[in-house]
Length: 425
Image 1 (spheres, rainbow, N blue to C red):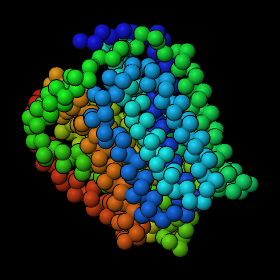
Image 2 (cartoon, rainbow, N blue to C red; image 1 turned 180 degrees about the vertical axis):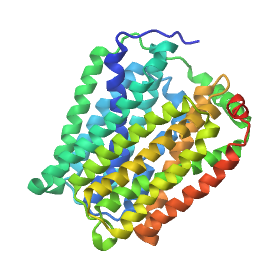
Image 3 (tube, rainbow, N blue to C red; image 1 turned 90 degrees about the horizontal axis):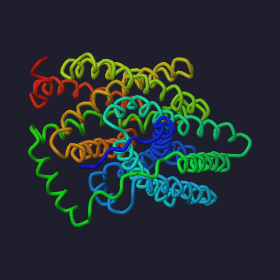
């Protein structure tokens, strides 16, 4: 069993580590989409290729045992931000080229792989450096700082680029924004060199044991109750929201003639990158308070119904074509708040279902991989569906999917796989 060593001053490194996690994730999955839309690539092309960028987070169960043999967690944590910073600089150079799309996709994918490995090592470092009490104590700080990292990238960097577009043009403004981002990453990496303890856990597994670990986890996985049904549930529950994540920024940015709202990049940075993310964070935090007092069985259906209601706001926007920034902000905030609530209960369902047995961490990694797989599928098909249906009918499609998922939830809550959680309630 791995010895848990309490690290010095956890409040000095937990916020910055998880802010960096959120920053990397936002850069790869969200900012890339906005950059490509700013260069007028088609929705179907943008959503398909940027959805593929989520694949690295789906590979965690396969990659985790292998990378654990290569270096310590601290070494990975210090090295990967430097590599991502270099990749950002190469991306800046790529933007000088007119045909930068495919080289930049490769760069974003590489950053996604490095970010995924960074996430695994940060979580591992957190577990091995803190005792059980402190792990629970800092869980809220983790989640909050992760969203702050996304806010810095998805809100701050996009906002800076939007302010520079009128003076410098699209290409140069994004180069400046990405250069600032590279400087932030380098500064945080240098800070971690000083605050991260040198007593990070050494390599825990030998390569010769990797095959045995895979086999053991697989045997535990296939014995889980209602396995195929629950795999379908975990993929389907958030697949509509994963489509919305890709299309909503494009809808806000697209020309009115194409059915969009024609907002500028500054407005989108504020509405999506700041108001939307804060609303999402509030929803996640509130879901924690709700689930601490009520069971999963009680919460699942009402929260999913609220999500359906919140998403109908996009149908309203597509019908009236409003340019009222206050109304747009309220609708986006409400939808993101609903997504935050549902995300909280979704993550707890993952934890309850896969957090069983002696290899619960590995099983949970499989669960999060299913979540990533749902993001890849939902995002990849979203652009093609929107191009066929148009924005208005696309949002109707999303509401219908979530309504169908709500009906399916009535069946899910009757299953007895959580033991006392469902039986007692």
